[in-house]
Image 1: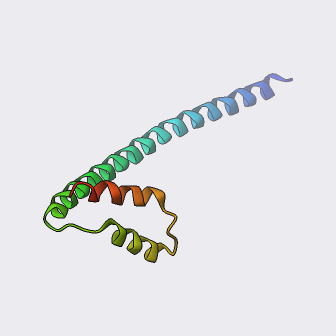
Image 2 (image 1 turned 90 degrees about the horizontal axis):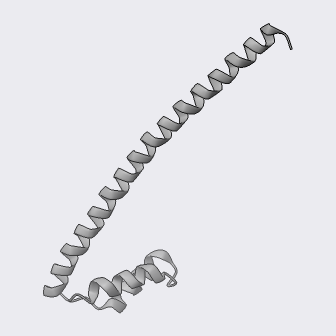
Image 3 (image 1 turned 30 degrees about the vertical axis):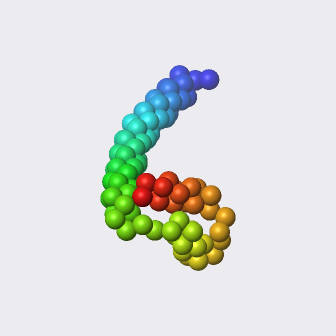
Length: 93
């Protein structure tokens, strides 16, 4: 391989290395944004559960009615996670 071709190859490999480094930095920045959004969402859900728990002490709700509402909205009553959360929130009454 000629010196010119080696120089070209070395230049291209340098460019690929730089591009990979930029991609890594961008990925880290995006990951930080996503993790921040997840943290905000978790805080919002937790605060909402706290408010609901306080409200439910004063205004009890039948868990079966809440589960029926969920089933009507989703067209499916096989929502074990959602039903478990209903049980958790309503058990604080």
